[in-house]
Length: 367
Image 1 (tube, one colour):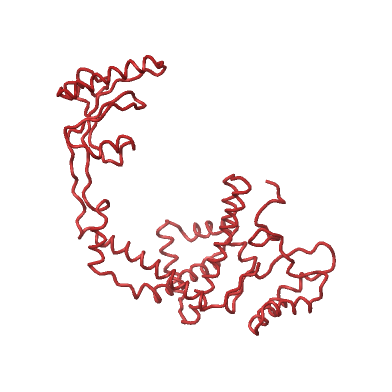
Image 2: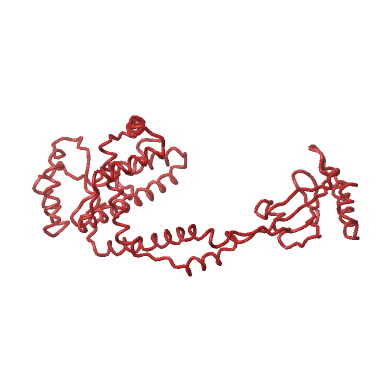
């Protein structure tokens, strides 16, 4: 792919359009500072931009033609900022996977744009959660981090050396990893405090879910099938196929006159199972082909299907019996259902809580 067409790059915004430089080499430092303060009025933004200008901005103010944008602010979340560097760092692994899929340029650009936009929103949500963690003074001590890392090592059969090796492949040190674990644990504690601790699943909720999902917990029907098959040679012409089909139609007519299916199997079926009565075994509907499934589902024991043209040849299927398997009792699946309901409610309440946080916050996306 042409490098000039890569999307999004460090010099493009979320729309893929070329962005204005963070520092205009033709302007003065003062002019850039005033522009930022005018664009984001209010003392908080002035403080943020003054700090960011002093720390990050000065190195990029230079005379000459080859000024490159290395970093800039892409979003302001209350008193915090999200930088282009942070966004690109989170976006990079997803971008590499998408580009490796070999989609058309147009589709790839659309996918990259959507994923990049989603990641920016995730970073905003993370900032909001981190601000709540500080506000509520939620803490994690070093011992909790140690215990979590030990559990991870045990689950993956890692030694200290193994874990360090895995982290090194991802460009992480143990210190980086501990910091990430801490962030995740703090956010989990926040969700537990704000949402999970307030959720109650009743017996009525569990019973209702159980009754409304008979396909999952109720007994399933199994169809005991037999067949008559006449095979079609691999290189058979149309005339030969029609001749075989006509022969199968005759068998179907005889069955309709009351002839025994088992007798007809032994007389006509070319299956290796013919001698055993063409017994195919027990099948659930979801184990059958769509065409056969749609026919079988409305049949009763003792009925047979019309002639089917299949890859193996022309076939007629017979439903010997329908067996109902026993379902799972409510007592057995109650813990599973409780977990499902709990996770569903947590997700709904979490999304609602994040939405409220966003409404209460000052969020500015800078394109």
